[in-house]
Image (cartoon, rainbow, N blue to C red):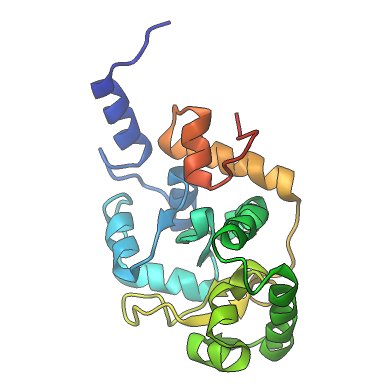
Length: 221
């Protein structure tokens, strides 16, 4: 067995991220291959995926969001990621408790009970539809609206969060948009770790915990 040097590890990472050569993969499969892609600024995901996938056109990404084959949501480390529809629920379940705990450590008020109440209010108001951030703030108040997505799984729905309309400020309940979740937290964590190692590995347990946001006394191994 040979230990890889820094330069070899660098090239391995670039290859895993499809940055040495574009891959002929469908958009959802490409996202699964690289472990999803951050999309805090909507145009960045277009450029990032165009750089990785052979023949990808801008409209194809927007169309895939509308068809729900890919999903934009707050996931790992409470940041916006673009993932495949198949990966959304496992990754949401895997990171849900860690995201809530991180928020409560940094912003103890309003507490978990108040946020759960806000989530129920929002769920009833959405009723299968969508809502803009400003409407959520008017309904719940800014403090609760800012974190309510940690207590109800939300997705950002087009046309928001696209090249054409870059502000990702239109939300729907994930259960309404994609259907109810399957699996559980443990299965989600296993998939999340596999996606990370596939897209970024080899890596230490500390690296995995840092990427996933699941840091704790027993991080994934």
